[in-house]
Each structure stands twice: as structure tokens, then as C-alpha cells.
Length: 348
Image 1 (tube, rainbow, N blue to C red):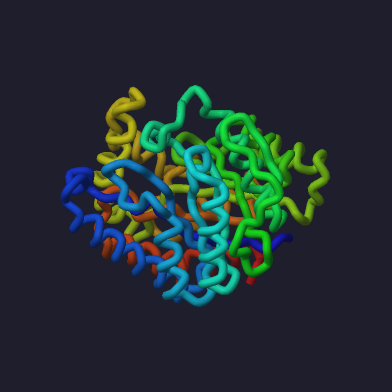
Image 2: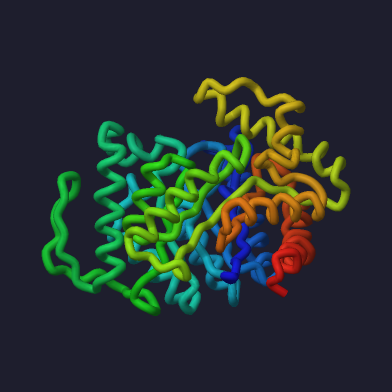
């Protein structure tokens, strides 16, 4: 059986009332975030991911900046974006920034590339949403070309060509691990597989079992594209909060989670979240991993049986969840949850 990595990721959410002109909350949120990274490293967690957003309810617009700070205060943990919104980024700078993180950290940087679930970055950086798909395809192609080779020759439709130019500095091993992030669209699974890239699937709603065909499609296409069974890498991430008392942590978390999901859902036509929906999401067949260590472990093990993942990312620090609850959850995940999952899956 393949080894499994256990990670933690966050979007560094904050209360939306605190953005434009009220930077004290963003400052505190970033300080809290660095405490989370440091604790995760001390707990022996394998990977820490930070997301990119350009909205008032998130404090990190540049994951690479925070990851560079994290590189200086950690020793072993891998550091990744989760995700880099590649469609509105410059691939040359993305590689340079993550190569620099790699040099600071001694070879621990990774990139998780995605289109992002929001569109604010497109008008902000002057991109046409009509080019949404083509931007991602071109920029991913360029990033992978830069990652493979010190000297780059490339041309596309939406960016000026590059002719035999070097991109520096180079990462410790030259290439930086690049994962492709997806939300369940079949074309994303096929793209990742054909490019022979590891796939990270976000399961933030519904029932995990519904994503089994998506993962099967990825694995089948990857094998057909020449990826060996041993080299297949699949990651899964779920929203998570762990507490010592199952019902108490559920009660404590509900208002924060519902407010966050309602904020996101307002622009997408979703109905406000009810407690009944929340409890279904927490149930055995739902995607939300909120409750006691035992409850969360059971759900992680069940997802491994469904997907055979090689990396599990716990997505925490959600909404306006108090920092102390986040830190307690992270501690329980690292000290009790991960060892128990490994024991159940015969990795200890």
C-alpha cells in the first residue's frame, strides 16, 4: 500500500466587515495563520496549504508571501499554495516566487494550480472572463515548461512569446512539485491525467461517494497516459473542525460555518444553510468532517476506502471560527487523528 501524506490547509478567512481600510483584523489573522503553520510543523503534519483570494472576507491575496514567512519558521513541513489562481497570475513570477520559497525552506515548496472558485482576480488584473478556459490552459502549459527547463521557448495566444530565455532562481531540485486542483469537473480530471499531474479534489458539499466516478476517470486516464500505478497521486480535501466533545464542537461551529457558506452562496443563488443541512453534511455520508476525533477518523478512513488517496488535506480555520478552536482542532488532528487513521489503515 502506498504511503499517505496528511496535510492541513486554510484560506485564512476573516470577517468581511474588517476589509478595506480596517487592516488590524487582517494583520491579526495573518499572525494567527503563522501560528497555525508553526504548530502543524511541530505536530509532524506533512503539508500546509494556503489559498489565494481577492475578496474582503479572506486575508491572503499572495500565498507565496505568507509561505515564504512560513518557510523561515518551520523545519520539515511541505509548503504549498492551495490554490494559486493561475489563470490570472504570471507563470514566470509564480515559478520564481515558489523557487525562492524552495530555497528558503530547503526544498519544501509545492504549487497547487487551479482556476479558483471566485472571479474577482480577472477584472482586477485586466483579464477577460471570456478567456477563462484558454487562460488557464496556456498558463499551465507555460508554468510546466518553465518548471521542466531552465531555458524556455514558448508561444501562445494570450501572452507575449518567450524565446530561449532563462528563468531564475531555480528550485533546489530544479522542478517544483505541481498539483492540479479540481472541484469535480470531468475535464479537469482528464487534463491532470494527460499532463501526468497529481490531482487534488475539493469535496466541500454533497456526498463524497458521488465523486467516485471522477477519481476513477482520473486514474483510468492517467494509466492510459503512461503514469505507472505506483506514481499515481490523488489528494482529497474536506472542511474540518475537531473537538473533544462531538455535540459541543458541532454547536460551536455551526454559526461560523453557516455564515461563511451563506456569504459564498449569496452570489450563487444558494438557499441559507439550515441546521438540518449542516447535520446531514456531518453525517456518515456527508462531506463535512466536524465532530470528535473518532467521528472525523471514521470519515477519513471511509474516504480512503472510496478513493485510495495518497494525500489528505484537512481544510480548517473556516469563516470566523475562533483561533483557539482552530488551534485545538489542529492539535487533535495531528496528535490523535492522523495516528489513528494510520493505525486503521495499517501504516503504523
